[in-house]
Amino acid sequence: MAKSLYFHKLKKTDKNEPMASIFTQIINGEIPCYKIAENDEFLAFLDVNPNSVGHTLCIPKTEVDKVFDLDEQVYTRLMLFSRKIALAIGKAIPCNRVGISVVGLEVPHAHVHLIPLHTMDDARFLNKAKMTTEAFVDTAKAIKAYL
Image 1 (cartoon, helix red, strand yellow):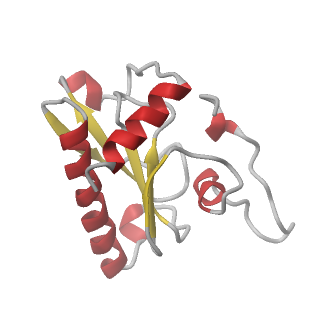
Image 2 (spheres, helix red, strand yellow):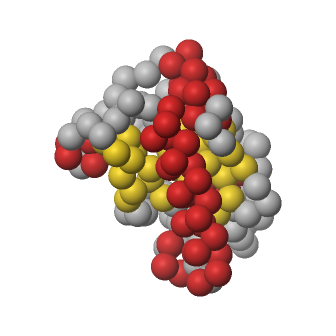
């Protein structure tokens, strides 16, 4: 999988429907990802433009733009799902702690960033970790081993 896998053209299924977000296309299997975990409601996968190795995104399978627009129960379950993933990241990836960030400006689909932090710079979205396909695969496998 190439580093640019999130930059596929978005597909519009019906001219009267809004385009599916890139994350919806990942959920539907139209675009590949480095999957960490999945259940009926949520999906966790590695960010292909990571702030640090192990940077993971947790998303609801329902396409909702803003995280605070999620139903309260879905929001709570998303945070519990994210916590489980964060604990696995913390065991698999050497770091000082796993940070959480909800920004949502680049993709109109609610998502939680789980970022292994070494310094505050890792939380600032300014510097990006360079990873090979093999490194993404190995990182996903390492995190999954702790779930």
